[in-house]
Length: 283
Ligand code: MBD
Ligand code: FE
Image 1: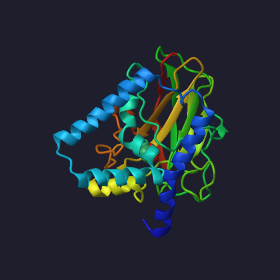
Image 2: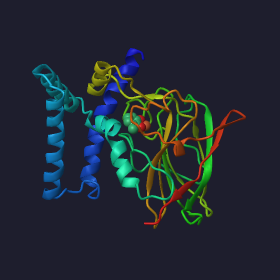
Image 3: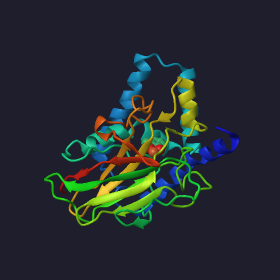
């Protein structure tokens, strides 16, 4: 990473906090208030788990103060969404999607934006004229678990650019760069034209990076495509898809890889072609 690139990375985590606040303010559904009994139960259990660690592992004042300083910095850097989505969301997702019989989901992460430009069933994702990367055609069908093709299903795709930056989080990118919404045809078919994403490092210049360095971890996620797929009367699925052979498929920092989410890209003239069908559960 050169200096300019590092400077850009710094803002991604903090922008995620601002975006999350806006989204909670406008969408009543996900900001839901948790009832007092449940807060009492969960907060008591969380506090006890932390106290147990202190007692079991003889945590010192030096370590306690290091934790305090670090927690303050997570807030100052705006990196709570990044921290939580990387190290906790995978368990929340596991619980939320346990009941599904259709396609596997995985975490949303901190960089989704609602309302990306709508394209036809075979449209090309918004990108710069000189956007670096290997052209990728991603095609398939959206069906119900009973096999019914879902006419007019909606597919939202967002992914990082070749340097690992997401539009609207890293500055200097066109607003909707590498973000689009496709409407499947009458048989649920779609053909998405985009670029094959590159392996991705979470921003390392804030509190999360400080933790990663202090613990001797790494900051990598395997290359991934983020999707939200939906159709009226069916449960929306949030997922990600991955590419075989990526060095970080087995040690994703966000623990969000599942075998069912591995693609099988085929080399074609001037790029890669990949197929994947999405199967939705009825509401
Ligand atoms: C990402 O791009 C991402 O997908 C997740 C889960 C966390 C941080 C950055
Ligand atoms: Fe991502």
